[in-house]
Length: 114
Length: 110
Image 1 (cartoon, each protein chain N blue to C red):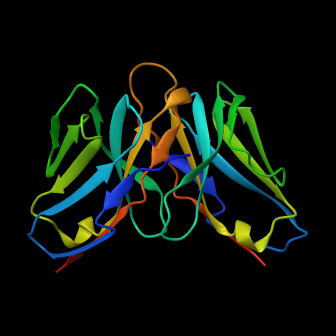
Image 2 (cartoon, chains in turn red, brown):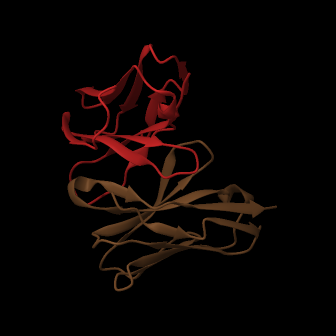
């Protein structure tokens, strides 16, 4: 199984809502990533988890709260978002050992904040 | 963070033609990778070239790396309509953080 899954595929939320994005992989990868991608732009790194511990936070506003409950799951909790947070949110994973740097990406969650 | 530059930003060709995309970067690298993204979808890893390699092939893909010029190129031969996508180069810095270039939007017309 070389798949990273993300739910939901689409999400529309108001600025006062609380919602969560979910990501799952069963490849035994121990590094997991959240990226934000605006239209016609490259992905921008938000968070990195390594062995279920947060290792990189790219100065992301606190209205985005990541969580890694176990080695297969990664969540992104959303609260009090702004319209400019509307974007494609991508999850990725990587085997955290050996020489491979390949990241496996999920299909993304298209988020619209009204 | 610094981002690489890809050129061209957009490329339109006919099916069967070759497509060449270039990428430049600013820092020293361990490796350089190329990813493809179909419209609004996740990225798919295409090929990785290490800093001590100069050229690598995978199917219809050929990647070159010139570390003295801090540049790489991706050649897709005998393009197909299904190759229509955005192509990003990415290089790894510390902590296995990938920094992506701005991307090239390739359109292959049938």
